[in-house]
Image (cartoon, rainbow, N blue to C red; front, top):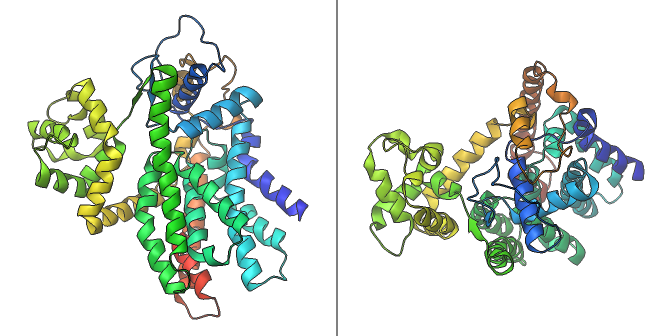
Length: 428
């Protein structure tokens, strides 16, 4: 079994090993910058003189921490990178995703086929991932891999919670908690998954039907608690202001549910997002409602968020979680449809293009004052980009075949149990 686990671990780290270190995005520097700021506020690092604002983020200065970048992932990746070197971050990612894969395999085998070799059945799909994008996202110095960790944890609880041992439940919840706190968008994902988990749990069995949705709700609660602790800690320890970028709000407005909610409720002084709604009235250009234009554009024709005051930007951004929940409660079907459309869009955007840093990305990272010299290096895969398109094509073929195979498992008559069909359906 140890050999199979070792082989799976090496497979996950294959791209990192070939590259000679992690793969970077321009915002990788933002997570490091956030992590260093927090460590300095707690006295674990000493600030160096002459440092300015981050060149890789949108922080307002030294006394700010960007709340849109996860405190949990910022600290985990920064401590790993500064303590053990940047190459330790892919190891962290690999451990998380392998644990999330191992858990449902362990429970499923115990329930359905206890005599089969668990180590081999765990390792084979990971080894097959060598022809997928998984090793690239394990190598990626970004929290993207934790989206998979979150979905695997939720799916495991939805299908197997009643059959899981206490230690297994605790591991699934712990993995889910780390994943939901690794990126702000994961909060919305979990919130939207509670109802489907409830439905799946009821379909599988009425016995302890409540267990899975309660556990998934606990993961959501831990994510919300982390947001509150983040803000209080930044203020109490470092007298720092937590700044956000309202990606959730912008996405809900572009999808339509958020826009309809604002139309029905604004003006209302109790809703900070109504300030953004007023700024959106400067133009009737439909492109102003797209998330990227809404957040980043500064012209009156296409801009809105950047046109309101700094204090109003902070209020709108800090309200995005409660705004998202309010929109979900008011327009559940429309919000869920928007979520599913975004999920399908993201499923098609499985390209590894952004994971392989360009020279411009590496240059921007070199400007971040918090990153020590020599920590971020240009890997072997950045030497040429000619190989990316053929690899992308291979991945598309693999994903298409996988989708057809998973759909066949769910839909075609077979001896496959209801639990395994449900697990396959969630992964589709």
